[in-house]
Length: 105
Image 1 (cartoon, helix red, strand yellow):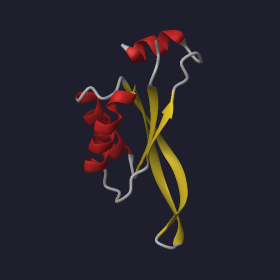
Image 2 (cartoon, helix red, strand yellow; image 1 turned 180 degrees about the vertical axis):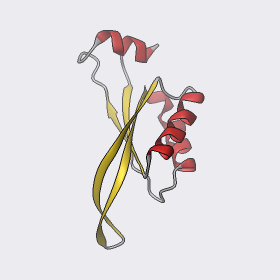
Image 3 (cartoon, rainbow, N blue to C red; image 1 turned 60 degrees about the horizontal axis):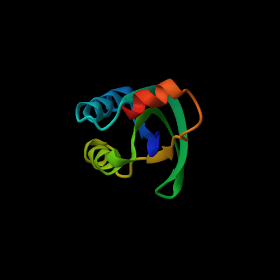
Image 4 (cartoon, rainbow, N blue to C red; image 1 turned 90 degrees about the vertical axis):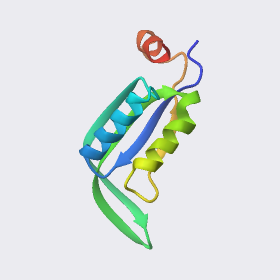
């Protein structure tokens, strides 16, 4: 019953950007839920050097069928040239069954 549920991991430069993207995604019914985790520290290679930044994580719970639209929306409104948008499968028989039912509805 819970086939194709996804957790989408998106990094943003700040909480305001994460909130803006989260609202856009939810308003278009592309997800059931959005969570913001503020205060993350990131280290990564960019333009030939190691860079460190403070960022936010935007976690989105959605269905696979929404992924193309969700990705396009985030790419359109995200300030980064190359935003991190990664989808993880939510295993159908693990975690809270009630929560999975809610996500699926």
